[in-house]
Image (tube, rainbow, N blue to C red; front, side, top):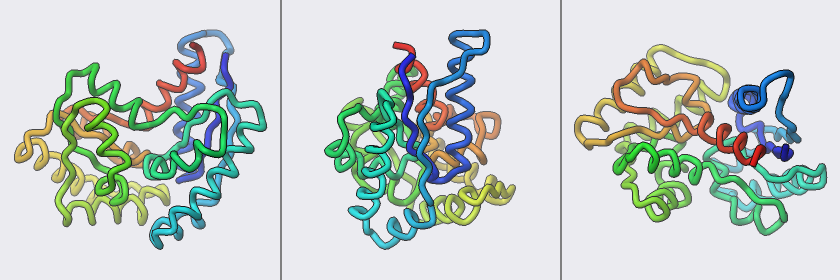
Length: 231
């Protein structure tokens, strides 16, 4: 079994979900008392968040690169970054380590192709929804059209993530707002599925709340890591 390097803490709530999913996945595949071999480094999200909202991405890249090197030094075989947004700085991190990074957008794109999805909505932080590092990767690598919410909807989604979900708060009114946005994207934009492109959104939205297929990037990423660990 390969050793999984987890770079987490962004936020720790979603990292805890990753840890659970990885161990459950290994147990399901191997049975018995098997569990995942994991090296985990968890950062202080307060520091990262301030840099994000000040557009100081190079500073975040330095922090995460240093943590990634520590994970590599601890003999991890590959790395997963337990957040969608910080995949923005993957190119900088890759320059500083020799082990491969299992990219969350690639894992998601592969599942979308498997499910024959050609047009998908993307929910996440404003950074993930509006910048090229995530949306363009799926569109160009997997030939899938990615639709983002309008500006007002983006503001709602982003605020709920940082003010509620990253603090472990699941608010029914916020869930209703997300459901309303998802339904509009399905009906007006004719999206065939929706990417929960922030690792915390799965705390709020489950498949039973909407009819459209949802693609939980936390679960997808963890499943891909399990398969890579056992390959």
